[in-house]
Length: 332
Image (cartoon, rainbow, N blue to C red; front, side):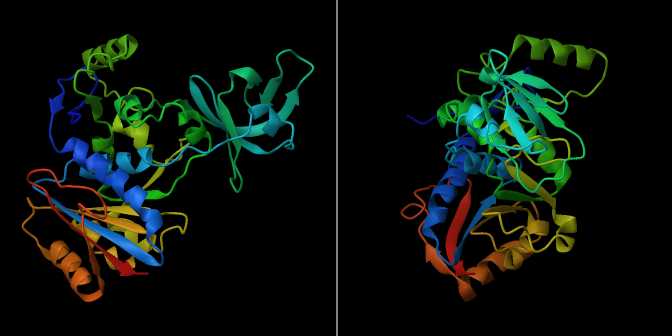
């Protein structure tokens, strides 16, 4: 049975179901699973939509959901082996914390972890990991994200804390940053689950914010796309995705070698397709824009350097109604 998804501007707004939501999430997941099969080549998928709203963030969510959870040692085992000053990422029931290790006090029962800004009973730590190569000016702390409807569907909940503690930040989204962040604030639910996804305290906080005419950000802990895609920022204690401005991308190339995939959202990003060297590139074309330069660039790349792939047989993905797509590989 096909799972129907809905999007809403916030947890108390009316959810709008759409048949293209699920397939776009599935495309990200299929691309992630196909990526290990590509050796010394790059998978390029081009998707043409009537409008590209939410497409990049939905595909990104599918990519993140398909990543396997890391198998981390027991927190106490890690803490016994590290030196003071080591940077740790700690996941508790409510928070994700990036901070320096001070000491482990095993004289107390239960053992207590001392960070530079807080202390925690070790049994209450859900997961932690050493973070190397990070210069930490001050501790970072954020509400523990919850994957919501998508996480339950993808059975992410069992390994979610390990993913937060040791994230695979291997995805980049390139486009208009303001629009992408607005899309990430959208609230995703499965059919029949909209009410269950609305925590009472969130509804109350949102109502108070609206009364005062103040903006209210949904993400981090309440089932927004933001909670699954987890874009990197200066205030985030953990992240899965890097978001780049297409207008400034020329100054940021080449992209970090740790990236495995890039989603190019719109013509401003697609013009750099030949300069992106990730294993997977997904180009999102907007048919509401009269300029066909980006589409011609992708077709030229396929015709001059590409080896075609079957979306249905190789990627096991079928575009929804109104969406056109093609896939091919090129040599890196």
